[in-house]
Length: 75
Image (cartoon, rainbow, N blue to C red; front, side, top):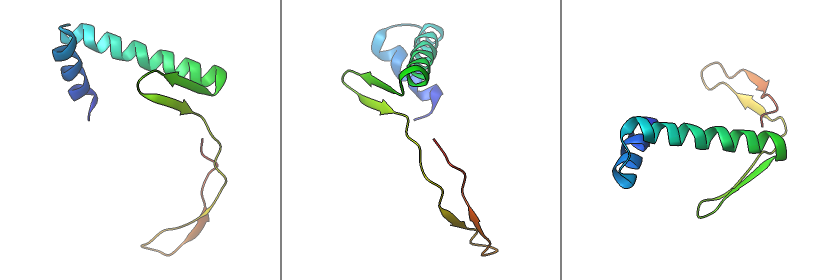
């Protein structure tokens, strides 16, 4: 689902106009980002728990050139 589709769906469900629905979604994203930055996790009732985790490097292979390289340590 794209952001545009999410805004339209939120608008239909809540009765808000699309601008107000977008503000709600942007606000929710900002709150979740801040919570993840501070605590490393964020519990959203009825949806689930989001957590920040560290992944170790691994070997990646470019399928066109068969070049082997290590991936970055992603969060």
